[in-house]
Length: 236
Image (cartoon, rainbow, N blue to C red; front, side):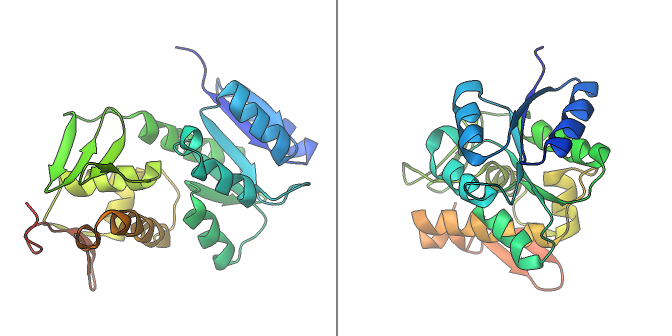
C-alpha cells in the first residue's frame, strides 16, 4: 500500500521541517507549502490525503483556504487539522464550524498530532457493513459517502457524515458527548466535548436545508447528550 500523503501548510520553515521528519519516520509522504496559494496548487495537483493547516499565513489565512476547500465538491471531504496559536474558544469554534476536523494549538508534540491525524484518516477510510441506511426519505449511501434527502444530495462534511452514520445505525438511544467522542471520533483521539456540539449544529443545519422535519431527528437530551429518534417524529 502506498504511503499516505500529508500536506503541511505553514510559513515557518522550522515547523515544516520538524513535521516532515516526524511524518517520514511514521511512513507518511510529506508535501510542504508556505502560503495558501501554493497549498491550493498542491491540493489540486497532488491530491493529499490530509492537510495540516496553519491559521496565520501570508497572502491569506488558513481559515480562508479551509472555506474554499469546503465549498468545492472535489475537496469537501478532504480532512483538515488546524494548527494554531489562537487558543480563544471563538477561534476554535470558528475553525470547526467552517469544516476543520480537528485543531491543535502551538506548541504541540508531533506524536500527539500524528495520533490525531491517524485517527481521522482511519475514520475517513473506514467502511462499515451494508451499502446504505434509510430513515424515511433520508438515505445515507455508505460506499459513495453521499447523503440524500427526498432524492436531493445534502452538503455534508466527513465528520457530519460519520456522526449521522452512527446515529442512523443506533436510533432511539441517548448518548453522552463522551460516548459520541469515543464511538465516532475514536477512543485515542484528543478532542474536547464541545467539539460534539459544533458538529451536531452543522449536521442539523445540513438536514434543515433538505427538510426541517429531519433536522429534528437529532434531539438534545438534557443532562445526557443527544438521541436520534425517528419514532418521536413519525419518520419511518
